[in-house]
Image 1 (cartoon, rainbow, N blue to C red):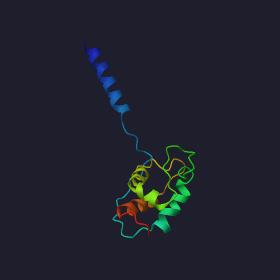
Image 2: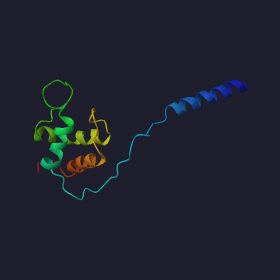
Image 3: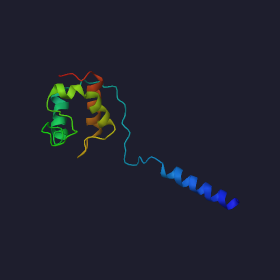
Image 4: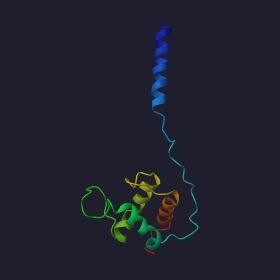
Length: 115
Protein backbone atom coordinates (compact mmCIF):
# COMPACT_ATOMS: atom_id res chain seq x y z
CA UNK A 1 0.00 0.00 0.00
CA UNK A 2 2.85 2.37 0.84
CA UNK A 3 4.48 1.62 -2.53
CA UNK A 4 1.29 2.57 -4.42
CA UNK A 5 1.11 5.87 -2.52
CA UNK A 6 4.73 6.67 -3.38
CA UNK A 7 4.16 5.86 -7.05
CA UNK A 8 1.04 8.03 -7.05
CA UNK A 9 2.94 10.92 -5.49
CA UNK A 10 5.70 10.61 -8.08
CA UNK A 11 3.14 10.61 -10.90
CA UNK A 12 1.43 13.70 -9.51
CA UNK A 13 4.77 15.51 -9.24
CA UNK A 14 5.65 14.57 -12.83
CA UNK A 15 2.31 15.88 -14.09
CA UNK A 16 2.65 19.13 -12.14
CA UNK A 17 6.22 19.64 -13.32
CA UNK A 18 5.25 19.05 -16.95
CA UNK A 19 2.63 21.83 -16.71
CA UNK A 20 5.20 24.45 -15.75
CA UNK A 21 5.12 27.47 -18.07
CA UNK A 22 8.48 28.00 -19.75
CA UNK A 23 9.44 31.68 -19.74
CA UNK A 24 13.19 31.47 -20.17
CA UNK A 25 13.20 33.34 -23.50
CA UNK A 26 10.69 36.01 -22.61
CA UNK A 27 11.67 39.47 -21.45
CA UNK A 28 9.06 41.23 -19.37
CA UNK A 29 7.95 44.49 -20.93
CA UNK A 30 8.08 47.54 -18.73
CA UNK A 31 4.73 49.28 -18.73
CA UNK A 32 5.79 52.81 -19.62
CA UNK A 33 3.48 55.77 -19.43
CA UNK A 34 3.73 56.74 -23.12
CA UNK A 35 5.23 60.13 -22.44
CA UNK A 36 5.76 60.84 -26.16
CA UNK A 37 3.10 60.86 -28.85
CA UNK A 38 3.74 58.04 -31.31
CA UNK A 39 3.15 59.00 -34.92
CA UNK A 40 1.40 56.59 -37.25
CA UNK A 41 3.15 57.92 -40.35
CA UNK A 42 6.63 58.20 -38.79
CA UNK A 43 6.72 55.14 -36.50
CA UNK A 44 3.83 52.69 -36.94
CA UNK A 45 3.45 52.63 -40.74
CA UNK A 46 7.17 51.91 -41.29
CA UNK A 47 6.97 49.08 -38.72
CA UNK A 48 3.98 47.59 -40.52
CA UNK A 49 5.66 47.99 -43.91
CA UNK A 50 8.88 46.38 -42.72
CA UNK A 51 7.63 43.67 -40.36
CA UNK A 52 4.02 42.87 -41.32
CA UNK A 53 3.69 43.26 -45.08
CA UNK A 54 5.14 39.86 -46.01
CA UNK A 55 1.88 38.31 -44.75
CA UNK A 56 -0.57 41.22 -44.31
CA UNK A 57 -0.33 42.75 -47.78
CA UNK A 58 -3.90 42.08 -48.88
CA UNK A 59 -2.99 39.83 -51.80
CA UNK A 60 -4.83 36.82 -50.36
CA UNK A 61 -1.75 34.59 -50.21
CA UNK A 62 -2.24 34.32 -46.44
CA UNK A 63 -5.96 33.58 -46.07
CA UNK A 64 -6.27 34.41 -42.36
CA UNK A 65 -3.94 37.42 -42.33
CA UNK A 66 -5.85 40.71 -42.00
CA UNK A 67 -5.02 43.29 -44.67
CA UNK A 68 -2.86 46.07 -43.19
CA UNK A 69 -2.30 48.11 -46.34
CA UNK A 70 -4.21 51.25 -45.30
CA UNK A 71 -4.69 53.28 -42.14
CA UNK A 72 -8.44 52.50 -41.84
CA UNK A 73 -7.70 48.76 -41.99
CA UNK A 74 -4.94 49.07 -39.38
CA UNK A 75 -7.00 51.32 -37.12
CA UNK A 76 -9.95 48.93 -37.24
CA UNK A 77 -7.89 46.20 -35.56
CA UNK A 78 -5.44 48.36 -33.59
CA UNK A 79 -6.32 46.61 -30.31
CA UNK A 80 -5.66 43.21 -31.84
CA UNK A 81 -2.34 44.43 -33.25
CA UNK A 82 -1.38 45.60 -29.76
CA UNK A 83 -2.39 42.26 -28.22
CA UNK A 84 -0.52 40.06 -30.71
CA UNK A 85 2.64 42.15 -30.57
CA UNK A 86 2.60 42.44 -26.76
CA UNK A 87 2.28 38.66 -26.49
CA UNK A 88 4.95 38.27 -29.20
CA UNK A 89 2.66 36.08 -31.32
CA UNK A 90 3.37 38.45 -34.21
CA UNK A 91 5.23 38.90 -36.38
CA UNK A 92 5.50 35.22 -37.31
CA UNK A 93 8.74 35.82 -39.22
CA UNK A 94 11.35 37.96 -37.52
CA UNK A 95 10.67 39.88 -34.34
CA UNK A 96 10.00 43.30 -32.90
CA UNK A 97 12.26 44.99 -30.38
CA UNK A 98 10.93 45.95 -26.97
CA UNK A 99 10.91 49.60 -28.05
CA UNK A 100 8.91 48.78 -31.20
CA UNK A 101 6.37 46.84 -29.15
CA UNK A 102 6.17 49.72 -26.66
CA UNK A 103 5.60 52.18 -29.53
CA UNK A 104 2.68 50.10 -30.85
CA UNK A 105 1.21 49.92 -27.34
CA UNK A 106 1.50 53.68 -26.84
CA UNK A 107 0.05 54.42 -30.25
CA UNK A 108 -2.99 52.22 -29.56
CA UNK A 109 -3.38 53.42 -25.95
CA UNK A 110 -3.37 57.02 -27.20
CA UNK A 111 -6.22 56.38 -29.63
CA UNK A 112 -4.48 54.88 -32.70
CA UNK A 113 -4.44 58.30 -34.36
CA UNK A 114 -3.68 58.88 -38.04
CA UNK A 115 -0.92 61.37 -37.28
